[in-house]
Length: 474
Image 1 (tube, rainbow, N blue to C red):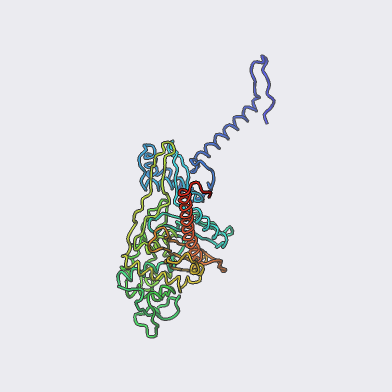
Image 2 (tube, helix red, strand yellow):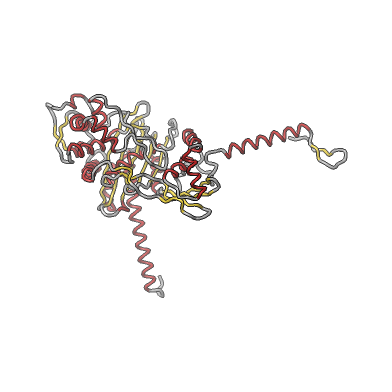
């Protein structure tokens, strides 16, 4: 590209032609600009270039976080070597979004290298992603967590290649109508405020999954009797609509939603959209709200998992977290260690016990019975209590939204407990039910825990035998 280099008359120096000098300066300027743009990337502080592609909103959030006072405070704490608090962790995670295919990551902040260890169960995470790809709904998201501690085990999202892209963090986004998942809150409110139990008799008329005004009258001339458990198991809309109107009222219903965390920021390490409830300015809108028969009550999959966790943990809703610990690589000092703490206690233990009965019925004979066939046949689930709540609703312009929120727990072993939430969106042809994905995820988790313990017990026995007979060949 440059013209031939020539020596001057004295042969002492090399001289570039004028046009060559101009071109050389242009190349140098272009390289400097490219390098500056690269270094200003949100993920330039990472040690690995993997997974750097982010959706527009994530890049915008990262750029905003870079200028936030929260990040400045966290960076100051890093520089001074003081212990990081949860607010610092949230600021760092929003500046350096985690790669969820591994259990650890490294970031550089103010000259310090920090090793961040996550709570993600990589085997379970891989299973969730594999199932979403295998059944390829239009959109999907899976969240699983330890209901006792709030440690997040799975955060997975899926966007079909032929569908318009949505946020990659669908597990934290309140983009889809909550449908009948709201019945968890309505049932809890009915138990807390109206004294209902799983066996309480109620009346209904018409089809189970419709909601007409004649089905909501206080006196039903022609009706059939069902229990609260049956209404929950079969997701009978008129029953829950009548609970909202005649047993609870708008004020009590709103208070219960607030108590469960609707309209409140979730204190998670990553940004989470708030759960929001539809307005209820009339009795019919109140009925729609109570049974989830609307498109304006929306939750994130993470929030759905927290609802299931509250039932599993006896009314205790944990603070969710994905960061287990942060260590300074230079000094070796641990800068942050996760500590389990409650986010809220939305119901009494007795109410949680009644809800557990209702959710068991969903898996045993209700709307999710077919999805739990393999769980029922598994000998590893002997002594494991499991249940959940399904929900589905048409979302204008998007498709059929299908939900499942549930739990599996061992009565005396906290290590065998999991809460999960799955949402999938389908076109005219359904590929899988969210309840099936949830059931398989919980089945795999319990199986993996038990197999790991069996191997540990076998290794311990083998080492003990070797120690007792050191001269005997193994």
